Length: 196
Image (cartoon, rainbow, N blue to C red; front, top):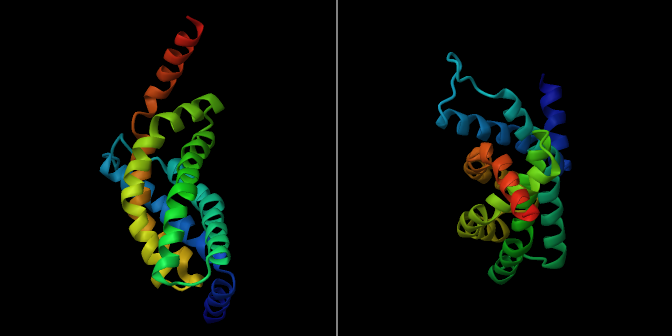
């Protein structure tokens, strides 16, 4: 057991992307579980937890979110090296207007596809939920990003953000599930308007 834990520490230290993928692979399904608990799901009633939803969050978080965040942090560190307040403000501003909208659109689109929805349904969900989510994100994430870029060492940025994202991902899980039943209705209404 000690050899395994020593090897894991070595791998996580040497490969921060793997550390981020493991972090997101744990934190994202936990966030889905927490959101479902607030939704009224439980272990022993007819309204049981949706474990497939948790699995989708884990898959998406570990295999898509962690690598894109790692890539963004790597690019940002090369383009704007350093951790001064000025550099941190620049990185935060650029992240808020570039990576954040990309990440939110990708979330709704990608999770819809993992739910086996059509591309049209995924696009409709992005259109319905992007702006409300972005408004909340733009008021929260710049502060977190500023702390991350100014105070956190580069090798620990993905794990730091993954811990901060636990609450954020609970919010995303809530927004993802919110009005999910209305998306086909929105498509029908849109199609009716286009055909009229």
